Length: 191
Image (cartoon, rainbow, N blue to C red; front, side, top):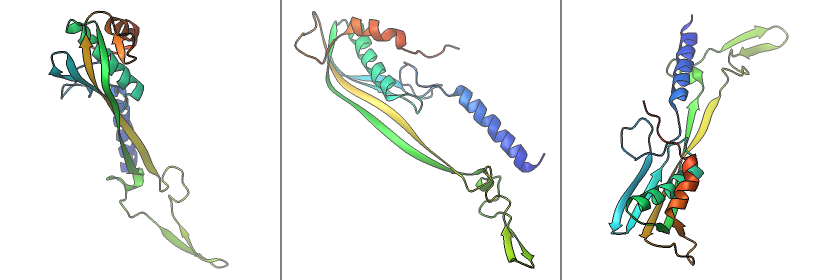
């Protein structure tokens, strides 16, 4: 097996192993060093006011991040002994990053910026060039360009007791939110 074939086999095995481990951020606290990055966090601002955030990884959609934030607000409300919450301020930030990876012939195990190139002479056409990778769909000058996005939703919430205010469209009944969103919440896999 040639060096190039071995390198390609190792790269494919590594990509397969990484893709098997890659999952979207589950509903979990955001603690550094977790198996899957991201999660929720909150800071108490006043007795009944919190700033809550949920950060997803590159596999977590914006919709999921916003849903998990709303679920965390409801869960925190019930946990603090309140009945409803109001979203005073809410935002979702998108971080986008583009990666450009050169083709395999340019990698650390390829030819760098040098590649074989031959010229030959024919009596009726003169000098011609031949490049073994030119036009080859696998080794041609391909670049792998991918853009990855991460979303983080934040909200400032005010907690309240008693019946939910009917005149405030930003007010939510915490138990109803938990009942409606709870079945779609993905929790971390226990090992």
